Image (cartoon, rainbow, N blue to C red; front, side, top):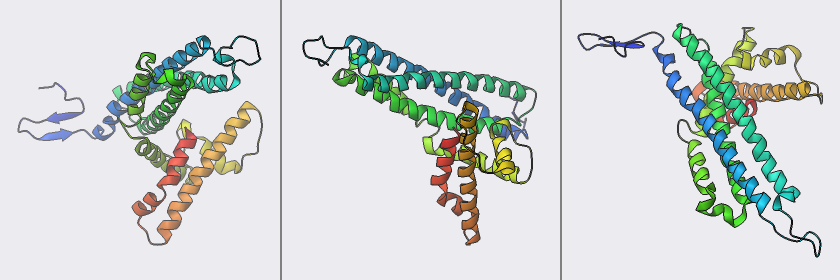
Length: 273
């Protein structure tokens, strides 16, 4: 009788009873899949980059100078530019995936102790990271395929299979736009909390600094670049909030005002990722 009754119960008379925390518990399975998807696309981008680099090291084409042997196409700066971006992004996505998994493990531990406070933030994080990682990976795997010329379109290269697998991840378990709008909803709530002087979760704590200091001066150091990115993100969130509120003032419902601001909201969610 106690099987599978941790988060919901079926009484003897057949009545279904869900616990108070049941609504948030449903996030658990969704975010787990999204965490795994980020890991998968990182691995597949790395595979595509490896194939393209190896091909570029073997393939020779065009004399640079008359009478000289044809160089490896990897020696061309344009080819390096294509592939180095893919390699760097594969590493970045893998590091992101590792961090996401560690964070997810911490959230699961909290859930086991009955704490669900960290779930909304992690839901927003996993949503935007799943959306951006799948989109970027698909784009760069296609770039790897292009960098192999006609050979990249042959099934024997394995690139068409990798590409078809990763492009599908952009849609299942949450479409790109839908997921970014879920993140945007979290960002708007965070903005309202910052306005009210309430404490914020770690990933959006920069909003408090934005309210305190306003415009962020440019600084070319690593820390300065990060702060500038925070400033851009805060500015885009601010623009969304103003747009929604201005539309509500004209007599629109909040839902209609939100719908008319969705393009800006998606852009704001993209920036914070």
